[in-house]
Image 1 (cartoon, rainbow, N blue to C red):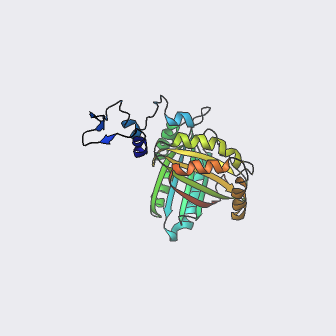
Image 2 (image 1 turned 90 degrees about the horizontal axis):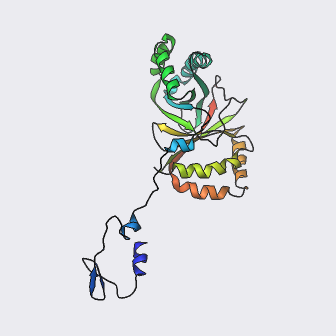
Image 3 (image 1 turned 180 degrees about the vertical axis):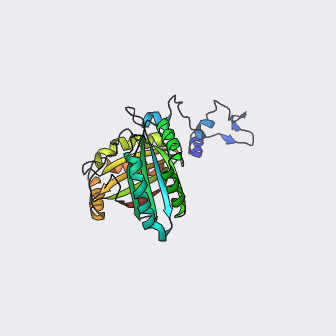
Length: 277
């Protein structure tokens, strides 16, 4: 691009080691603050006074989400599921804990022998802090953590906010399969992603497959998670193909793909205790 621009300066412009020769005079190519050459290489970004999370997240509530990924020893998966069934519903149902179990699954396709849990904290970070403080005093939960630790190979989590243009996840009857599509975006592109998907979500709600859309705040940053529900794999295929019949969907795909560094899809089966069946 720079070469093409320089060529337009005109004939008689000869490059020297110190600058450009024009009619016998040397013009130094400056790279200072106001240099036009510098403008070819430096992208100017308008300053913002709001964090991206304030622009993208819902304003009417203060929900914080935590997603947990537990990689379980293959021989322990059934015992792990039973252990979760004993403890997690009790926390979900106890009004002393300002949190809700949104959904809990085992991965079917994708990473194997994996459990995924999604929690919602109504009240944001103070609610999360309150729950963690109370759980440290809960003997049943501390015993659960010790027993769970014997069954795990690894675990990780992220704290998330929900996009303002997605519906809040609510319990739904089953049976369903769920797809968690995770996108690692290039830093600085979250606003652009949100602008395109604010329109695109209209194309993906006609079959009620859209469950929730989130972006990370703590953990691996610039991560987006889209959660979808389908009756089965064939329903998933049909629904995704139907999106291409809508004017504008191809444009969304065209412009959002370059924003992605990598992406991953998990097909998940709800555990018996999951509110998302």
